View: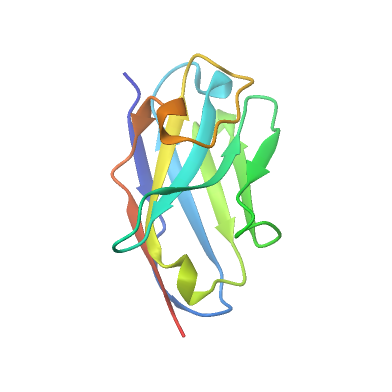
Length: 125
C-alpha cells in the first residue's frame, strides 16, 4: 500500500507561482511513476503531468511551459512547480502513483493505482 500526502495548495493571484509537494510512503519510491491530476468544480478530473523513474516526463498542453514536475527520491517526494498561474488553473490537485510500470507515463486515471486526498489551488484574477 502506498500513501500519498499532498501539500502546498493555496490562494494566489493570476501570474503568481505555487509549488505543490506530494510525499509518498514506500521503500521503492524511485521506481514509481508519479503524476498530478486536477479537478475543477463541475468538471472531470484531468491529467496535468507525469514523471517516471528515469525523470522522463509529459505534460498536458494547457500547462506546458508553465508547470514543471520533478522528484527527489531521497525524500520520497514529487513536486509540481506552477508558474504564471491562470484562473483556469483553479482546481483540486491530486497526486497519484503507479508502482509496477516504472517506464510508463500514463495520462489516464486508470493508469494509476494510488491517490492522495488532493490540495486546493485557487487562482484569482
